[in-house]
Length: 122
Image 1 (cartoon, helix red, strand yellow):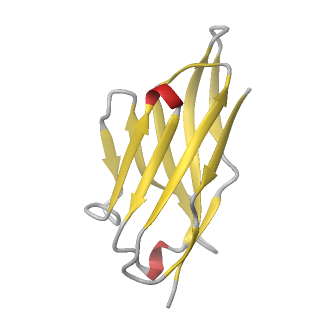
Image 2: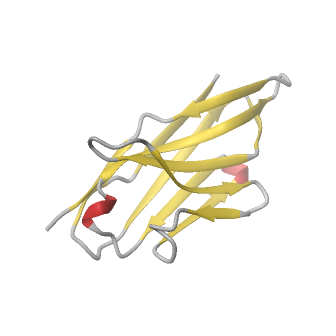
């Protein structure tokens, strides 16, 4: 079993910044990719950004140049620095680990955190 716990959400004014964190715990040997998704009210969940264990990143066009993903492999933690926030960034942000290799040699798929609310409003 793998648990993902997000933190760092909150209310911020347009143009402001927030930093989200997601810590993975459990019998983890390796997490190849960690990602952030978000879901706004009435909309489908969408991929915001992802990062491989080697540091290769991908960003949705809507956040390029404003958001930065990083990770600490030793701590199994991923971060999302969000700058120049806009009202359209308002959503529940979820941490995701598509596949995790456990210390028992098993592969676990589709691990999600509980989500953290980000609200951008004046």
